[in-house]
Length: 168
Image (cartoon, rainbow, N blue to C red; front, top):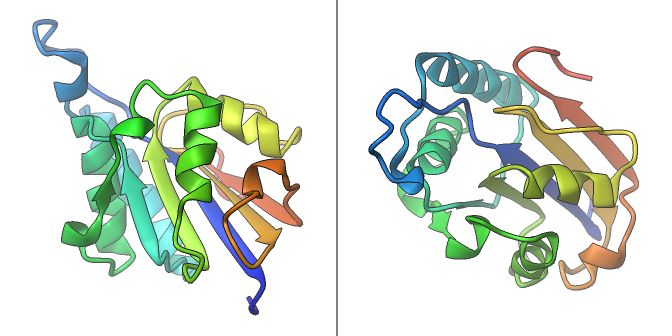
């Protein structure tokens, strides 16, 4: 990837546990299936040599644990994950605002968040990707020198992967 390209990777958190109905939504941990799926997706992203300059995560436990597991698989220091409150209970507009505020020197950014907003953002960028199951990754490459204005830009390439589908 040369200069003038930005890569955005959107990841929906892995499957969360509903075992304890007394937990607040932000505190729900990953389910056993979620732990398996995030390990699978971390390995796949690593095999593709994904190297984000920044990982931004929702503060919800299930999202942050997903981000940390993927960070470790990609040799990204989990302590460097940026926790962003605007990724929890977000809107497409607030997600785009987070993306457009990213440092323009970063070529690859990964956001870890929730549905339905991630599915809506994916649909905003691509009519080809129809949803974001748990632990799915949607990757978009933009011909751009800055993140500013990305929300009004169409990607030049996209790909999708999920634990159940394999890489496409």
